[in-house]
Image (tube, rainbow, N blue to C red; front, side, top):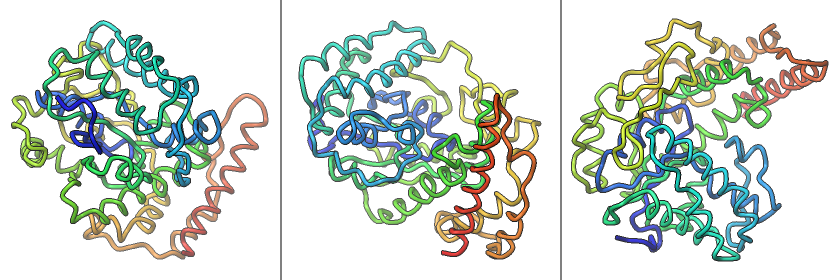
Length: 372
């Protein structure tokens, strides 16, 4: 077994924007006996960079709503600071263990990490993954280890730290990514400023556009594999065969099944965070939007803005092929009016003040984007 991941050898990074099927794909790949899959979403680089620079993790980083340059990745970090993030990861791992009914052994990872006083960023990531494999996987002969992240602005930083790391890029129609995010926020009663000041800017500019640009910049690099969520949902066996061939592993015995921790079935019911009436799928199936009768939460003006903002990059990835790009003037005109659902009610006047500020901030973002 490769335990040190020399220069990233044996490491696979699944990159997505969130709300694009990345949880589904990691759980499908968990069924491959050659792959150890870390079943949580990580923000290793941005979180550890914050700890190196400031000694704490900013809310924007925790929400995957940051694209600021990472300038602290070459510093060593005291283990006490590192635990501010690692403890979050261990909590999420414990929750995943509960889904499959296995013993929580995350404390072993924490105890072992405390044996060293300082870590560099790459040392910490490698050590954490090695310990994860040792604690949760009995057989230590697996070929690959897979992590999942929404850090789409930082793919080049991962490559700098781990030159031999391979990347699976899971991409989805940006309109549907936004639709799913908006649905999740509606269910959780989160306001439009929840994700880094403006949800639309975070989902489209910080996450989706950053990812699309990276995908196209590495399209001739054999260490990068692109898969569209729509193709995966429509024909999972075909897409997964292409993916497993690229990974150099055997075809999956059960390509539609989702498991955690090396093929363990999920025994605890989950609910979709996008649609209250839809259970979390245990098998790959078409877009869950077809299973819900709830009102679509995306507005036409948000859709038009996304069509305008992402049009060229989306077309390069196979989307919007028969869709005419809206005019900047037409999009701007729709955003001159304020709709009642833009105000988020809550205890006290501060929520109305925040709502008004978020309304102005969104229009500032949109009009600036339309003038670029």
